[in-house]
Length: 162
Image (cartoon, rainbow, N blue to C red; front, top):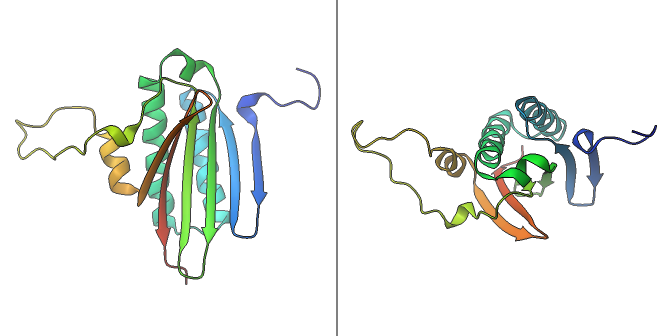
């Protein structure tokens, strides 16, 4: 690789505007990259004064969303870079942090999946399929769009500033 260029899985960027602060990271599809993404998210949120409990919730959502991309996204999801965008917005009434996971995998709208009823007994319980349930429980909102051949899945949380 020519000097001065970065591989696509090592890009990190920070942007600011009057209302929001953005951090971006591009990763590849591997366990090591998931760990790096979690560390990036935690550091960026800490730098932006996102409450620690919400950082944990967002990190759990991120890990589950990436696991779903790796497991269900298909070959393109694994071969193409995965882009992560953190937006932190501080308004007088509330703080909001959202993460968007953008992948080139098979188009899949997680919002189209009906909410799963919790099992009433161990006999009704089945393994797997709980990632989206956990994301829905940890996030205050979810959004999805498919644009330019990529899935853009966003989850977020809000808090009252001190």
